[in-house]
Image (cartoon, rainbow, N blue to C red; front, side, top):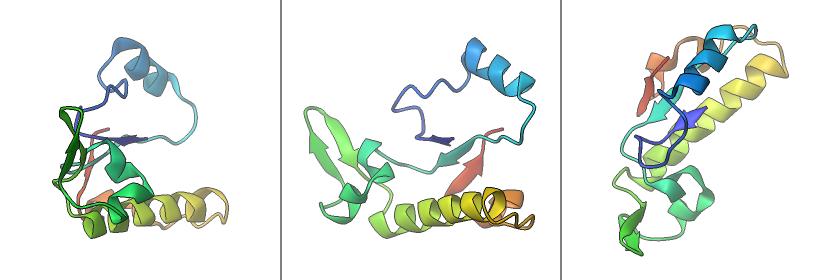
Length: 105
């Protein structure tokens, strides 16, 4: 799960979310992207200036779009490598090696 510094309620820290992860029988983790806004988790961050504000809230930034994109691409690629290709040694096994990603759990 990719969290976004608490600017969007992703369930992290909530009792039900924590209980779900505590009882999960499969591999799981919680990762956080540094300094994002909501649209940094989409392709839109590559198309509009950073930071961009709309309706009183940040849409992108302050993380640079290229940094957010690199972190997300590495994370998603590692997920597919691990679970679809069966590669046991991915960046998900060593998330500290992914710039701008913090392991929350």
